[in-house]
Length: 346
Image 1 (spheres, helix red, strand yellow):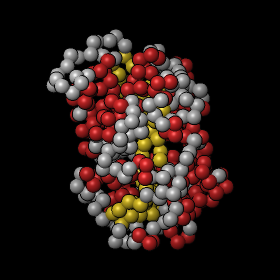
Image 2 (cartoon, rainbow, N blue to C red):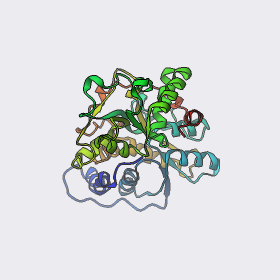
Image 3 (cartoon, rainbow, N blue to C red):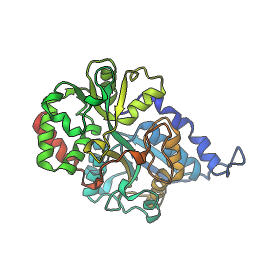
C-alpha cells in the first residue's frame, strides 16, 4: 500500500548529502568516504521501497557496511522469516505496520534491541518485549468529499461506520495490511465481541476498493462520500498538486478513538543474523537522529518517531493526534485475517 513513486524518490536522492554532511559537522561540503567493509547485511524491507533503500544507502555511506535490500509486503516477509527460522538470511526486518512485527516477535525470532537504541524511541512506539522499535508511523484518517459531507455529518467515531446510516457511504481496502492493522486496533481496544460486531457492520456497509489511493480518488471524484485511509496518501497528493484530493478533506478522529489509531512501522534484528553487531548498528541508525531526519525531510510524509526528530512540518503535529494507547505487540494479525475471512472481507 504505497503512494506514487514520485512522492518518495526525493528520499533516496537526498541520502548522500544528508549522510555525508552529517559527518562534516556542517562546515565542509565534502567528506572522506567510509572505509570499505567485507560485511554485507540483508534487510527484509516491507516499508516503502524508496525509504528502505534510502536508509540502506545512507548507512553504507556512513559505515562502509553494504546492505542488500529485499523488498516485499508486511506479512509476506514476516511469514518468510517464520518459515526460515534459524536459517533466515535476514539480518534486519522493517515493516509498514505493527502486526507483522508482532507475528515475528510471537515466534521469538527477534534478538533483543540494544539498550541505547531502545532509548532513542519512546516506549509507546516500540515492542513491549524490547525486541523491536518504531522507525515510522502513520495515522488512520477519514478522507471525505467536502461537497458531499458537511463537518456535522462526519462520523464521530470509526465505530459509527458500522451503523446502517453509513451503508455505501465509505470505502475501505480490506486486502491490504494497512486496513488489517486498523481492524487489529479495533479488536484490541474494544474487545473481541464489539470488534466482531463492528467488522460485520463494516462488511455490510463499505464499498470495496484496492488501495488507499484508489479510495481517495473515488472520494475526490464523488464516487463515494468518504473512506478510511492512512494520512500520508492525502498529504502526498496535496504536495504534488492535489489532482486526486482537491475536493477532499481529512477527519482525524482523535479522542483516543480506535479510529485515531497510529500504526507504527517497526524494525528489529533477526535472531538468525550472521552479523548481529552490524545489524544492531543499522537498526540504531534507522531509528536514530540521522535516519529519522532522512524520513522527516523526505516526501514520504510518514511520521518520524525516534531520535528526537520532529515529523515533517506539513503534517498535523503528532502530539495533536490523541491516538489510543495500544500495546503494539498485542496486535494480532493472523487472528484479524481469520476474522475478516469469516465475515467475507477477504
